[in-house]
Image 1: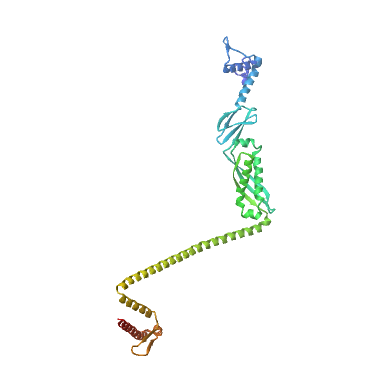
Image 2 (image 1 turned 90 degrees about the horizontal axis):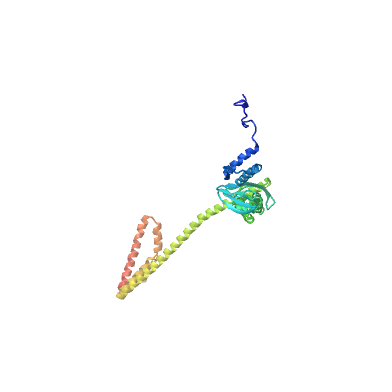
Length: 374
């Protein structure tokens, strides 16, 4: 059984009499509902009506007005800022949350993400100072830190950033030769480019901050490969020689300082010893002076004997004048000593007796001289 044969045979999409409702009646019903919502006044128990000819147009206008008002709602996330413009002029900056503005075309809102770091890849071919081509590939990271400047000062911020990046890179690379650029300043390309780029962006008031520039690739023509390799080898040799020289210096300097310290300490010890000896001799002289004042003759004889003994002790020849005889006795003690040192134990024992005789003779002479003085 078809859908229009059920029940009493009436079409469910039509009225009870199978006749379509009049459009004016439908609009009138909606108008009553809208008047009830909007608080339409009743007169004699009935809601006042708007003439049926304008009811459809009023409903459409009200609906469009409500829909237009709802288009002014917008939401700003935590990392975003809303830049409100009224007839194209800046009005205010809104922060995270739900906001409403007068809908288009009166006001508009640009949502700018100020909390996320954006990456974009950049690659180009640049001519160096010595007219060599290099291929540079890098990644630029930037932050939109000023939403107002980002929205108003530059028409195309991302395109401007790309152009300025190429300009800054040409300024850094174009002033260096390929050899220096590849070997010595490779690690300086990114930081120097960042400094130049940020300076230009600040001058343009672009509202962007470059956080870092990472150099990923730096290629050069194969024709200069051998020269670059030789340069790198020479640089490695230079670094090795520098390290060896520093190692030698670190070993030599401490030893030289130690030797200098030792010499200074020896000099100080010698100075202290000389001063102590001088002070000891001075004290001894003062002590002898006191004894001499007590017994001049005894002290003078004793000093004389000590002096003679010291002279004879350091002398290797002794000449004796025998009493009552005109002959002089010469004893070659130096030869006797040399002979005693070169002979064996037996000869040493034989030579000991003459030396003992000389010693006895010397003692007798001293006693005789002492008795003569007395």
